[in-house]
Length: 131
Image 1 (tube, one colour):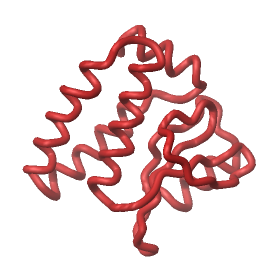
Image 2 (cartoon, helix red, strand yellow; image 1 turned 90 degrees about the horizontal axis):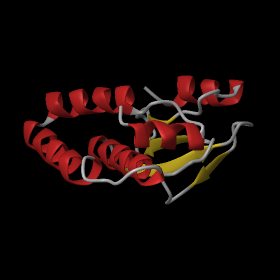
Image 3 (cartoon, one colour; image 1 turned 180 degrees about the vertical axis):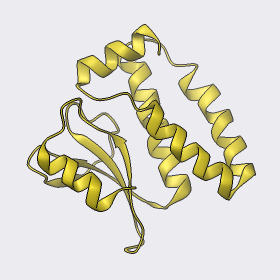
């Protein structure tokens, strides 16, 4: 974990996203080797090439949102501490939980970013709606 990335996590109050994205990458690799190779190439160009601070975190979150949509088409939503969802185009949640919810109603979503101290409602949302 780079210092810039760690600073971005602390500044925005979210947990490290790398373990979440490793799981998404493993699922993608099992499903489609070509898509996995494209995901690795995108990581190298977008995430490794990002500058410091908030830009590094934004690169990670954008990558995670893209990765989730590569597995399941859908939308990006913030989940407030009260458990209220709102669609968002911005992958920088700043304390809110960020999830990708598939368009298909019978599919589970993916956590893109979890607050460092998630509320009970955010944990329940992750348990109910996400893998």
